[in-house]
Length: 348
Image (tube, rainbow, N blue to C red; front, side):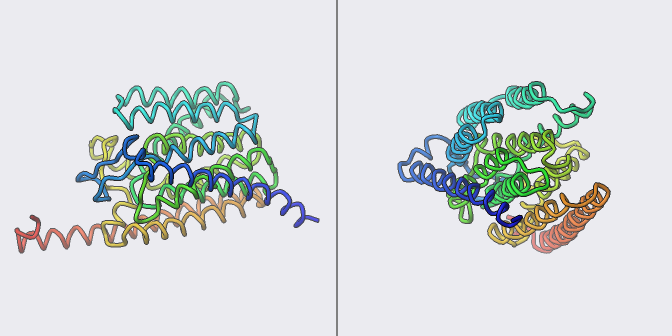
């Protein structure tokens, strides 16, 4: 009986994901074939880029409308999240086309997050809600930081929202409405990934990465607020993303650098530059994401103390992986320095 109930709750979500994936792929395929993709927003490579040729930043034009439409049809109580995602997509598209001051972009992000926590507050002290709102703001922005390597952001969206969907549909406290919404985003991400995996023909762009980050935070908040999962669950599901962006920002901040400016210091960027390449880097990150999501789903059935032990253990594993990349990167830099000193023309 349990297996039957599980299957009966998952197959509609799988159908939703399939339809959203196909719709997203159709939209993006049309934009590419018609040439509209290049006119909407194009990412021009520079000294900080990992890619070497101009690439349209139109992934959001497929992922966001398809996801929002599915949420509007299948999850009526999540209407504010859908509206806020469209609002952020519109503001971010203006930024993609013309560029907007940082204060305007941040104000838009703040409005979307505050609207959600004010209209749908959780039964916790105000300071706790403020911390949650700050973390959601961080998740909104870190997605944009990670949209620079072929297949990375698309794969993380697929795995992350897929984990959300499984927890909301088959977890101890199922909420099908939330599960279908998350399945829709995961499916749309798969459609985007068909064009984003190496060699990438499109990137998300701000119009895709900002709403995707908001959806990750907002749907994570909704699941916590409705007791579908504990507060640690969204962080663990997206832990590779969060760990990379957070550690990189803190390092730049400690060095007094302008951490909001584009750079090539993220772990995924270093892995590409170390010779792993875009495809292999993405696959390694997929493996890390898969393990993190699997552990998070398994932890939902454990006692709270055991859950936190697993969360801390996984954080230590990610720290060790990051430490290994750091060591290899320092060795790589040392080798380059020695080569430059022995042959000054090699750096030209």
